[in-house]
Image (cartoon, rainbow, N blue to C red; front, side, top):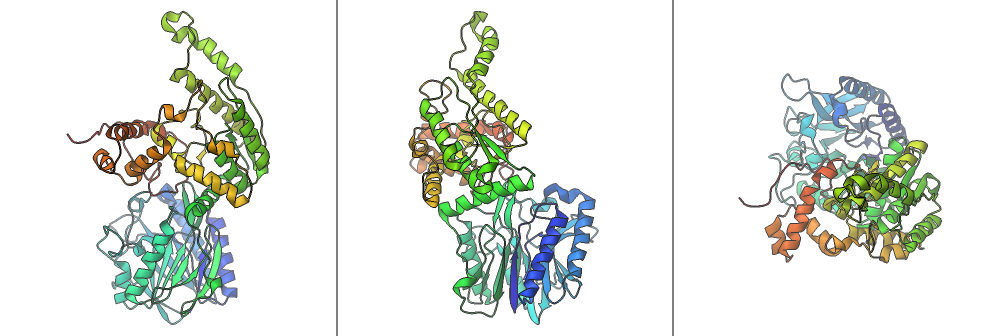
Length: 563
């Protein structure tokens, strides 16, 4: 049996675009003599469709699009992800479904059994789970080209007690399909990228194929949709758990594999990137798709000469092309000469536009207007270098960048990293202004490493080494450095990883060898900054626990430990 893995990049809600793409891949699979072509989870609607699912007209239109796809399915069979209605009188009104299409019609419909409700997933908000896939009511074993195929959708593949520390579900759909007589397991998926996740996928899927002694085919979505990035890397395993095919990562692909194959050729297995290479590719894809799918033609960002804005600009220039990136310098009275020089050098290296807007006069005007009101006794004493005065500069810069965005319809990119966003080392309505936070899930120590990787990848110094090596500073007052207010970044990032991604508390982090007062300070900064993050631009998710809709912490709370 020849199976085509149709790894597509859909646009959420764009049913016509997605349908046309699916039809194109069906045609290509037919030309490649495939018996079966498999598309990702919710390929017709794009994943995740979120509250579009609450619109009855959207469900109707998606069902009409499925009929159009089915009519084109001749000469092969297609498994297509879509949204179905729940025809039962009780339960949630929708199903996360795949349709088996062939002979110009819909042959059967099958529903997702395990519905994730953790991290960024909220499927129980919309969908009713399908019955156990091996049951008579489930009927998720179908005959295709004379082979009994067991159909699953994404999470149905993620409940193996051998590799998952705590199983979230009482059912194991793969085991159920095995008992129901499936000869091949097929999984239509939309599995978001997380750094290091694909290696775990390969281990999980190989273990399951080996356990049931059946070939397994996994087809993943690719592309960026809002905060989420999907890395593709669809793959197939033989009955012994050996990887026999793997599609490209971070781009669309159609890979046809003979499931009977026992010894794959090198051309069937495209290597997947790991570490900094995968992180770099993910950010490029997420940025490119966010800009394109939101309808922007260009981006603007502030260039300070520091490493965060330098990395963001370098990623934007590679993802979109230099002609579509505008880096604005906004020197103040506290900006060092080398900062402006480094920003200009970066712009020259990248080939991007570099307008300069000095903000000293605007800053003076604010001070002149506010000093009589804010100084002690109203006696005209200058504001000084307190936080109010520092934030004024950041907010002047934010307003300036928004003017460029309004005038030229640029998408404004914010440049804060995860360490800053976590601790509140950023100014609300200042450097937090923007439509996309490109590196908000990248810790500062990783920003440095990724910047060096970017230069190595291109074989030359695109990001000035001085921007990488210099002591970080917001340059909002004389002789300022980040470490005036924060612990050293290597220490800070280690604590933040434990508190945010591993969900450890104060005592557990201290037990890992960290100073109790430093840990307490960091935790307090993270918790007190929740109100800022709630107002921040959406950020590209690349770690297991990112700020955004997958982390739902209360703002008005005061948990500090045991009662």
